[in-house]
Image 1 (cartoon, rainbow, N blue to C red):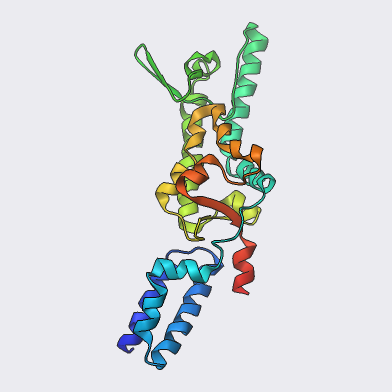
Image 2: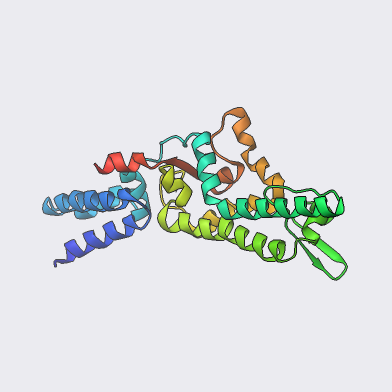
Length: 240
């Protein structure tokens, strides 16, 4: 392999790392073809200079930076699928609370997502002001102590890393969605996790969707970490 071909292949590979899904292989192939033509014309250095960094080239060739965010109703369905463990734990807490109310006649309150709090000695640390005052969680035992943290770990860390590695999640894959940066590139693991941290706020997590009220298809945390959810068909059509 010639030195020029090695440069071309390395550049295309590095550009592909910024993309996910069908766009990755398509962009790599297009870059190799484009740079190979430039090399034959003796203009490889000039072509690389025009393209800029591999990340800039990936954004230019991906052609989805200007793609509008996906519809909110489709995103809601994807969110429901992705967070089924958290939904299941909440339903189990509801059933447990109803059973206790029937036996003891005591009222209880519940929220979705569940409030997160930890009691250390006589001190209660909560991510939301009402968390320490919900007696239903105190008597839920392992269902709350293990079920809620595990479900939240999946919803925040598990799904966040999946988005960073593959650009999608089980729910997004089912609804043909993909999460990308504003430039249309693969998101970083930190961004994937941060854009899900609102789940730690219990029902206040729904404030993250407040922009929907004025027609914005991106959540507050989407704006914070500069991400958006788009239709995956955009990549598929381009690849075809």
